[in-house]
Image 1 (cartoon, one colour):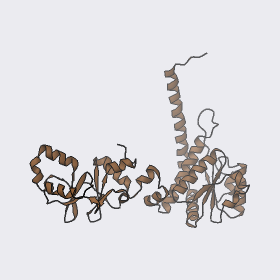
Image 2 (cartoon, one colour):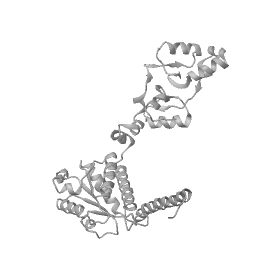
Image 3 (cartoon, rainbow, N blue to C red):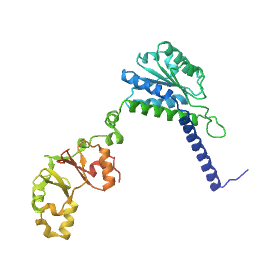
Image 4 (cartoon, one colour):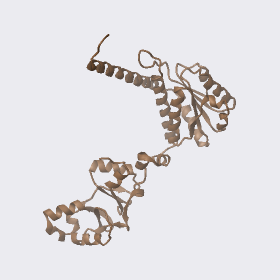
Amino acid sequence: MVVVNTETRHIEEMAFLREVLAAEADAVRSVIDRLDDSVHEAVRLFVECADHHGSVIVSGLGKSGLIGRKISASLASLGIPSHELHPSEAMHGDLGRIGRNDCLLALSHSGETDEVVGLAEILRQDGIPIVAMTGGFGGSTLANLATVALTLGQISEASDLGLAPTCSTTASLALGDALALAAARRRSFTAEDFARYHPGGTLGGLLRPVVDVLRFRVGDGLPVIESTLSVREALEAADALGRRPGALLAVDGGRLVGIFTDGDLRRLIVQRPEALERPLADVMTASPKALSSDALVRDAVRLVRESRQDEIPVVDEEGRPVGLLDVQDLMAMKVVTD
């Protein structure tokens, strides 16, 4: 019995893990080197399909089917309607899921998977465009049936066994993601469009307009004070509003010129109590960093992390205050954690 100590086993295992990851990275790089004009035609078919209210039907068997499911999800999230179709189920009634304006993305590493080839044969007869994604160097049955054939080249799977689909599925997934992003780019898909398809969770929160999450707005509890008033007068005016945030905004001619926070007030009382009679303009933080009213929550998160501000003014295009965003609001949305 050979006894291997833990340290040696960990060293060998780390080397093996690095080899696997390097092999998968090499597989993706090899696909990059093989790109040709066929990818433009594939992107065109996806875009044309979406523009004509069709769907990209994605089909594959086994691991290719799992990769196809992810590619389909990526397409849908980028505004290109798509759904997965199991090739075997297609032969038992699910062909009715496919419409005239749809196209097929068929995945088979060998290009000879019977169920996928059979589906492609039927759809070709119906005039449905087919994008095939296969391994090897072309010439497979599926590639010959396709409108556009994308071949990944000869890809060796990771590890000495070389049996489990690893490098080939990684390469397929990477190419599928690239095609989906290229199609979305060609359709001028924007962050606002993306937000419509991702309304939930942290991602959806980051893509919401910042004005939608303001608790304190001008005219609704947000103190907007002329910078010429004394600190005491400013505080009295703010208190008259009742419920208020931890800061007040100073304006001159209606435009934001400064911010005065509760923390500023505490420091002022301790260090310069006589300054309570001074104009707000003398003690405020002048020209604070602010967000425009068309900014997204992700812009607020970036500003919080860069400037470490706890209160962020939001202004319109003329620099007039619209509202105030508190970092606690972002933390409650779970889009800021530090």
